[in-house]
Structure formats: C-alpha cells, structure tokens
Image 1 (cartoon, one colour):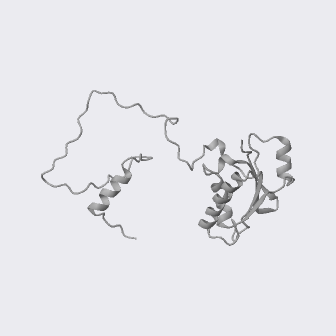
Image 2 (cartoon, helix red, strand yellow):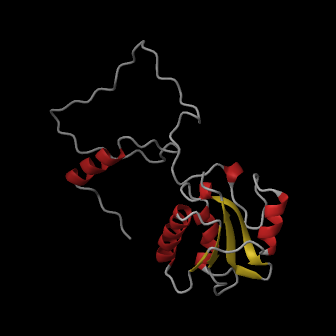
Image 3 (cartoon, helix red, strand yellow):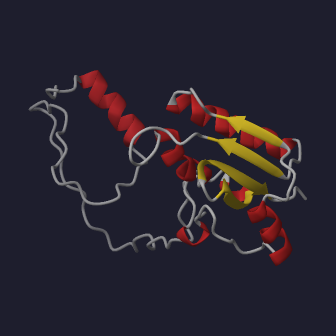
Length: 185
C-alpha cells in the first residue's frame, strides 16, 4: 500500500494524540514537521542552568495494564508458586471439580478473545475455583490460532492475577486447559 502524506488537520490531530507518548527507541527517520510559513521563525530552546528532571527508574514508570513481569509468566502444565503439593496433584490429575466450561470451537479469533475475557471476569465474580477452556486442536502442524493464542491471552494484566495454575485436561489432549483460579479474599 502506498504511503500518503498527512493533511494539516490530520498532522495536528496526530501530534495531539502522540504528545505524551514516550518512544521505545530513537526514531530512524526524523518526523516531517508541518509546513512553516516564512514569517514564523522557530529557534531551538536555550540551555538553562536549571537541573533537569531525574531519570525515571523502572519502578517509577507507569505499567501497561496488559503487560505482566516475566517472572510471573504462566506455563501450561508448569507448577506456579503459591500452589501446595495436594492442590497441584489434584489439579494435574483432574480430581478438582470443574465449575464451568467455555467451548471456543467455531469462534473467530477476536470473538473467542472477547468471550474468554468475559468468561474469566464472570468466573471471578461467581467465585468459581476451577474452569475449563476448550479450544480444540485446530488444523495444521502447530494447531489452531485460538489454541496458540490462549497462553498469551491468559498473560493479560487483567486476567493473570486471577490464575493460580493452568494444566491440560489430559496429556494426550492439548486442545483443552483446566485453570485453577485464586480464591477471592
């Protein structure tokens, strides 16, 4: 698709939207500034002797609501901290009663994602302890898109704090997971 140049009103709107965004790295290409009239002269800011703001550390930065620190990543079938031996054994063997199931067969990916988020928040509000999500095996070598995306969806900042552990329902069935939720206190 060919690039087009932004009009003045679009460029102004873009600058208003992006004024408080901090880039992750330095831009490779310098952004095009809006057309300057010859009568207006822009001078570079003068250096002052005032102290610059201190550099923000990682603790001071605002955390993205959908990001989760790497040490808290969820591994399907991996034991997580805070889960005792008895609960882990019961979950991995399938001895914990499933309170609700969500079957994502036949959903488009975006609809499946929306349904999962809604289901997880509903599970939290109803104080369900164990839920099962069926994605299906999918077609192809690596499985379906929903099955591949499910671990990333469970990592979201609004869903991950609810989850204690995730296991497959059976070692031969990679198309369904059982999720043990944390107790609501």
